[in-house]
Image 1 (cartoon, rainbow, N blue to C red):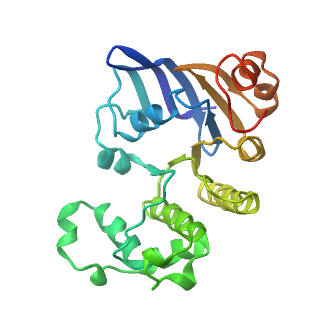
Image 2: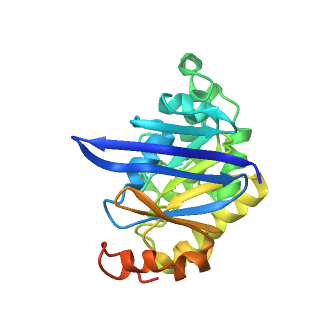
Length: 253
């Protein structure tokens, strides 16, 4: 199967300390994959490199065969990569609809922001709000949203640019179990309907093994496992990392 995202030999050090060492994997189009590892394993650094917020010391990252390394976040976004963050921070001074208009306008370059947000067509923004179940809150201030609704808005802000790859950093952090399930069900539905590829980090193992078709495991900067959930759950190296000897996860495998 042809890879949408291809990562080869990615390395990164800070102050001479390796954070990522020769990381490589492929993710095919339409797959939902989870990247897990104990705190300090290198997950956030890898996400920053994939999204253009950090430079790698070596290696390559290809999206549909086109290189991403060396591009800044806005250029990476134009190539088809969107990202959500562990802490949801929508545009608090705007209402929900205008926050989506702003992101859509930025997608065409900063010069397009010379027009007022109210002048931008709203059909696409309202369609994305319907996708995430927020159409009734279109005129609500972002600052007044509940935690769960703010997470849904952040997903909408990622989807408005019609990405091919969605990076999600701890998407269910701070949610109750029922909220986690509902939110990840929403992500899975959007992925299927849009043909969207998803790579997410997560500490909650019930979410990882309940929603990922593929699990990648980092340990101190090295990829130690990559496979379907059942194979990764049974992997002895993974069990050592999570159950003793290499750090602890928040949930047992």
